[in-house]
Picture 1 (cartoon, rainbow over the protein chains, first blue to last red):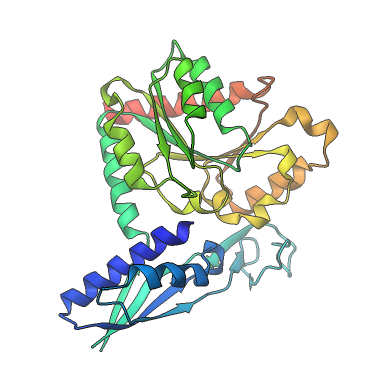
Picture 2: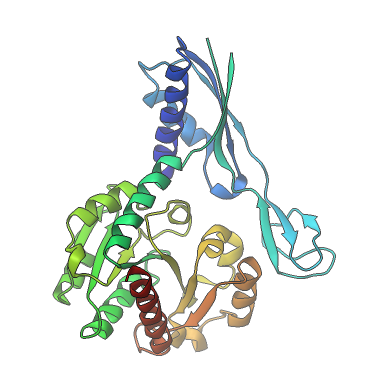
Length: 113
Length: 221
């Protein structure tokens, strides 16, 4: 259900930018949503189709960039992608890790006419 | 024409959360956002905490639930001011809901605000409410692998309470593996083992809360 509020935020950011640019319509909204956010593209699309009706974004295409989870070992600095249930550094076997990618959640750009 | 935006999708929520924090700050109130799965023991922890602080601090509660008044009624029976937020299907509390709850609480007569989030280990972690501290409860029947399945909530937490430790003899929960996973993700986290049913370990939790109330008051003066 959190996709509803996420979609409302995406819409208001896009509409605000479009009206500031005095655009006639929004053709594309590019969002970046990391794997760890748990946000489902199809759900956002579903809400977007409803919420955008009658707005400048009514015909806009939503594109999703989904950065995968990347971790950095806090012991040896190695950067790696974790397996599902194994967040251990493949080099030094340390479990002390920093999430360096996968939590992104922003509107990167919009395209307007 | 392409317009670069680079704006955090949650920035509107974050802005309201900052205002909530300022409001709480003005009154020197410590606010704790309590998160967990459904049934992990958030309400039991809150009831124990109200009971402990009865004569020491003025406690108020915001109850977040998808539906019903059940938890708010329990808190109210303990004599603490409480506001129930029903999210009507929403899976987490947001800053604007918290803002309207604050309008209905006696802020000038409070030292501690406990915010019980909707039972869920995923999205509550992403939505700031204006709290000073985030606390996650994980009950032993849920299993020790949860930090790997829901890392964000453990990365965000200031304190992790392992609840229902009285059940440990009957379960396969590996406490050491759990602690290692949590501290691996978050080296500043405090992990406490408690049973909200028997009261075991709660003294350490109460002392932490008391210290934090003290720090907040000191900053306020």
